[in-house]
Image (tube, rainbow, N blue to C red; front, side, top):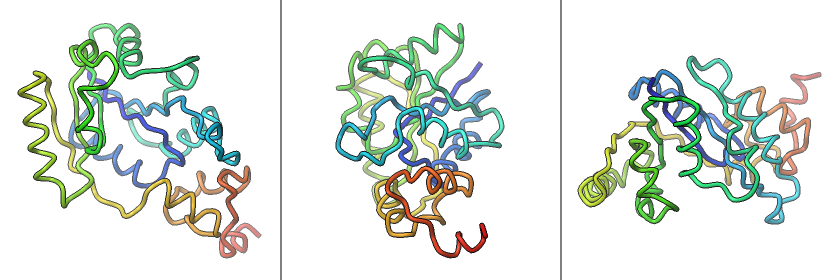
Length: 211
């Protein structure tokens, strides 16, 4: 069984994340794509309106709903205390004996990858795939991939991903100013507005539609 693991804060999960998931399916062709929201709770850093890890899990369920062979996993959200990729890869290996795991990374994570906790341990249990999101850095990314393959003896493939000019930080800012709706699935946007996550204010056009 081939499993692709796509993790992150998903704060909030937006259309760019969903497009990345579709690209992972199209190019890696996993039997199962696991969407893995992390445990980190941004509200502890002062943003009281941010959703809890459990609430981000619910948003992810809405954001990735309908994608074939895709599951949103609560493995990291329900794990108490510090959590590391090595723990997650190890637990997946126990849950799915004999599976082949591909850890999907953003290209910005490549530089520091060998410094991740227990990297030598978990890098023997999985391969890696990089989402190519920054067209102007593609040559640099490929050079870094070649360096890591040679120095660490790991397998790294690339997933060509359609670039969307959006990011979670920008979307959170827009939501607080009655924007951001176009960046989110309708069900995700509605839940955010209903719960007032990110101090979101509804777009007036959306309010009229609801009325």
